[in-house]
Amino acid sequence: MLSCVTYSFGQIPSFTDLPQILLDNLGEMGNNDSLWLNYHESLYLNFIFENSRKDFDFSKKKIGFISGSSGCVKRKKRDYFKQEKDRYIHNYKPTGGMLYVFDEEQKKKAGGYDAAIVYWCKFVLPVDKVIRKLREK
Image (cartoon, rainbow, N blue to C red; front, side, top):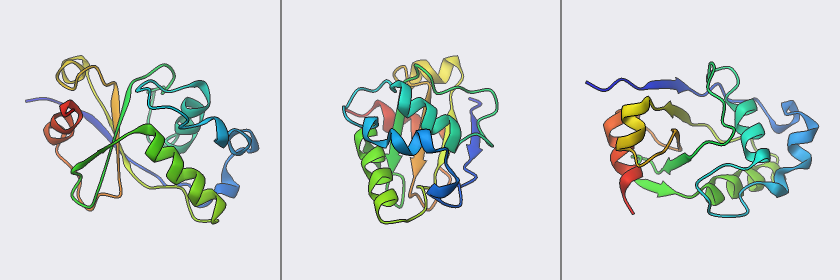
């Protein structure tokens, strides 16, 4: 049986609770489809998941994104950060989600992803479904 560390997301109440440096650099996030996070994306996600990620650091990590009401849509990081920018502009709250941090065996099965963020999903997905979804082209 695989074990995956999953952390539920303690949502930041509003963008006004984010450090100004993160807000100033929203334009530097999600500008490409690289699977690897850039410096600003890493800082943002480290802050957003600060209360739930324990010792996991997003820096230089390969992160997958999955959404949809049943968790069936594999997304690109560009989609995730575009949504965050839109939500900031419209004064909505940051996106909710769940962080799945993979152990070494799961990372191999997932195609090298260190972790996944599942958002706008009505269910807590089993880790094997998250891994299968990440492996899809």
